[in-house]
Image 1 (cartoon, rainbow, N blue to C red):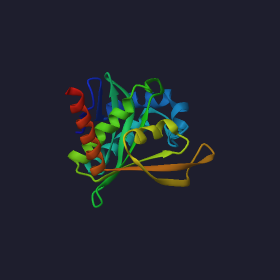
Image 2 (image 1 turned 120 degrees about the vertical axis):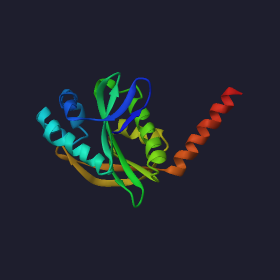
Image 3 (image 1 turned 180 degrees about the horizontal axis):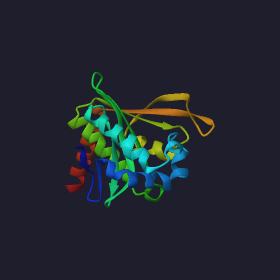
Amino acid sequence: MFKLKVSERISLGLLQPHHAEEVYSLVDANREHLNEWLGWVHNIKSEDDYRETIIPMWLKQFADNDGFNAGIVYEGKVVGMISLHFINWKTKHTSIGYYLSKQYEGKGIISMCVRALLDYAFHDLELNKVEIQCAEANTRSRKIPEHLGFKQEGIHRDAEFINGHYNDIVTYSLLRKEWQENQNKKDERRLQRTK
């Protein structure tokens, strides 16, 4: 099973059917907040959707070695989700997606989780490229890849239809060599501060 410690307070882990009520409650309490950018939210009607269909599908995806959906656990509570949407083993690339409960925004949780998942993708899985796609108007979500050194590859116009309107989608990417360069620079800065 996939489990990744992010910090003393935060971990990522695969969800099991017994988490269905907790995940459903998270989505249900954040419907308005999440629905602005996630088109699937209105389709979630009960915890049974997670128990009977969604979580088993996520577990199969992990078993098939084709990515995963992990709960973001903050101080023992599921407060969001983070995903490797797929893994293309031929080209060694993937795409990360994430969402967080409104009340936990602004604490750096998503940035820390994405950073930990990048380490996992580039070192443990030995992938070469990670993408993140965000609606152009979703400035909060776009700050994550921009802050972590991703490069903007382009904008797909009218690529998504949610809530009666189209969204342009921005694609960001980061290569393993770029991530390693960023880590080396951080290590050098840390060394300079200790001298």
